[in-house]
Length: 92
Image 1 (cartoon, rainbow, N blue to C red):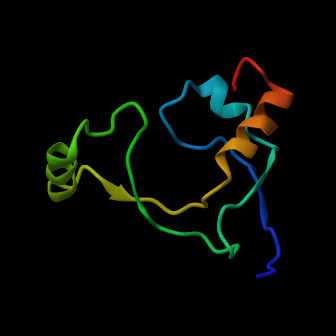
Image 2 (cartoon, rainbow, N blue to C red):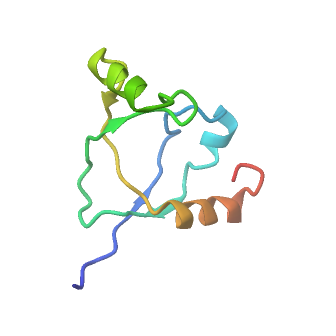
């Protein structure tokens, strides 16, 4: 199957649990999407540091409303990290 490889440019500091200075390093970078459409998606999300530690905790967090949907884009993580590393190794 042949489809266009979409990319997204980060135009503002993204939300997240990383320190502000790290999140600021993403601004201006163009990242390859890991989806076949340039349309934002809205999956349930959790923080990398604050995510529930097991299935039961995840279920409780979901049922109690601590896990919420967030609009955004899936990117190719390995390639995105390589791009970040090329401009800021300390942030990567």
